Image (tube, rainbow over all chains, first blue to last red):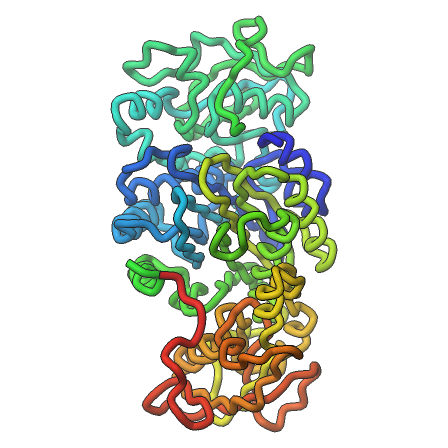
Length: 282
Length: 282
């Protein structure tokens, strides 16, 4: 059973209404007139980071990728819970946690540690307070919307190829940008598994076809293999749609248009995209 | 760095006020006039369960141990997020999730999967709604309180020794009992790492000394090594204190008394307890 089969099986379980059929990166819990946004991402040695990585960078990335999911929901972080393998140089892990918590004004809520002999794994649950209702979702794109991305694509790939540069090791969750965009977007999500793959997911969730103009994608300086960069994850840019005439409060690049649902969910310069669009667990 | 050293280092980080200085099993988030209780526990193959265990039992235990933490807070479960290694027979894992979610009326909120080559690890974040304010904590025992435990101690140990019996593999979180006890208790926690160790933790958190009468402990039928059972975790009984004259809404056994803080936090029949009290990660 691969990742998509496993998630399909999970969809047969009793789901919380705020889980959005497990088709989003975060769930929404309505309580006391407020809405909480909750998300959980896990990372493993050898999959999400190389063996030998400074534990401070592991901790940063663990928290940052979860905060990025809150950013895509225009949620203000409340705190995080951490599940951590007890590793060598755990004091460096704590220092990385301190860096990322202080950088984004986030508090530690709790967690758990386990000592086991295998490759280290870490989990993080991030909890935030929604600032916009309905909470932005990847499923809310509408035909006719313009498709935008913040920042640049490919910096994480370059960082990885250069031997774990900062863009790969210490991604920056775009919390301020997400909060500012919240009232203006129809659909929003972060780019974690590859721009093309994540765009297709947004189109599928919204019942649209996304038409991307490849030359419009804002690639990071130094990217030579642009298709590879468009398939690479880890940039944690925000991908969103908005009415084409919307005045946006943050700088973003229009990379395409959402169309009425066609024969396929993603078009690249009007044609079928390559088969492999990004990163999927097997 | 061992588990206690790691947790001590985490205490130097920016902590959420509801994290209770990381001295409890769950954190409390006040929002919209309500209080949410959040907890995260992780389990690993070879540590919390034997290799070869039916994945359905792994899933049950993963969720049950987290629901037990909600029970000790008198919280009504809202939902859980699951972080799961993609394992063989993942469909059995999903069936175990279905069993435990349906048994306790809990919803799946979301989660994440990772594929990696090492021993499987799983994390669960459980979120519940507080029904009593202040939310019961392990730190609220008062000198003069009676010390109680629900259910019987040692059934999980017998189950483990017998080759993974149901009491070990499928512990029952005492959610209904916790909800009923909430308005009556001073301190409450679940017994996950051993009755003696967890009692000492409650006494330390409360600034008391706990005096246990060993013969009063309600051991499960069939327990011959009673000291071993009192040091064994996994029973997920509820340990709580209440005024000695309180009328309790659920059946519980008085096993001792909370005293003003003395030279040591735990007395067993008036004397020092053995050095090893329960299970701690090293």
